[in-house]
Amino acid sequence: MPRIIHTADIHLGMQFKNFGRSGNRIRAYLKNCLRKIVDLTLENQAQCLLIAGDLFDSTRISSSTYRFVVSELGKLGDIPAVIIPGTHDPASKRIIWDSLKECEVPSNVHLVLKPEQNPLTLKELDTTFWVKPNQQSNSNQSPVPELADSSLSKYHVAIAHGSMVIPGVNPKDDHPIQAEELKDSNFNYIALGHWHSYKEVESGKAFYPGAPEIIRFGLKDAGHVLKVDINDDGIITEKIKVAETVWQDIELSTDVILSPGDIIKELEAYSGDSTVIRCRITGEQVPGTNFDTELIETELEDRYCFIRVEDLTESQNLEKLLNNHPSVTITGQFIEVVKEQLENTTPEMREVLNDALKLGTRLLTSKKADQL
Image (cartoon, rainbow, N blue to C red; front, side):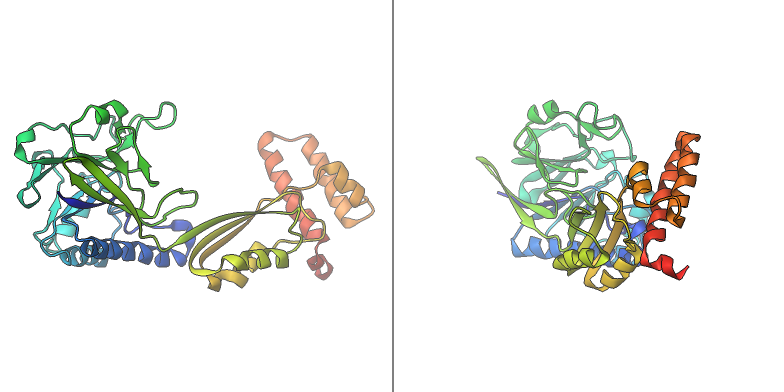
């Protein structure tokens, strides 16, 4: 009765391009996540670690990261680690897998990269692993293998990296998986990868564990691995949390937020070294107030792993602005000029002029305008 730790989508080396220096900190959390998964495999006395694709995020991986992976997987000793390619690290991106192999991959690590390596039977587990390894990042073919010979072992596990078909939602070349092919299979367990949130799919024996470390805003039910016990009566799964980072997506409305100080006070409640935070200020622009987002970020950056503040407030309508700022004032004259241009412009320029109206009135009505 094998016990397996099932994970996928670790995305080591992810760039986090818009995160500045904080990208290095988040990448470090990804590496530590793999360390925690290895430790968890040992602590739970699992007989196998499965990584169902996208161990790496791209070809831009440092040599130290490859060495780190080999070192961590080597800590498993005789416990096998079975790894398949995904959509970010398909077998065709040979530089990834060749670079890893150059680091002297230990004998307990099984890289299933070629169709001819399927199936992989581990006699000590009395289990056969069936794989159709992803050769390219995109394909309109299902990655789910067939169970061609049930006599090879007592238990049979499929490993696949692809997307369950949702008509009108998923691209057709996203390694599509039909629910029917899972239901009709005779596998004891189907270990899936590619979706970053946990999902038990229709068959009741096929699971996405989700990304073990959070890698973007908006992910729900992510940050876990699955412990899977396979026995004669079926399977027993348990979600185990491994994520360290906390991603907070916060919206603050000018209905209640009237100043930068109010924003800082609200965000202080989310302070934490592992917190990645995005704050969006929404609602109608507050007259006389300049939400200096860069200043707010500078004030708070030492309290988080990363912080981004976005000003999405909208200008008051023109009539309301003109009522508040008569044409005898500098602000009123500016509004009149923009109003005239808005009446005779293209849709593309209208967006630019609206942004100019928003930023211009904010600057002219702020305390900073006194210094101009």
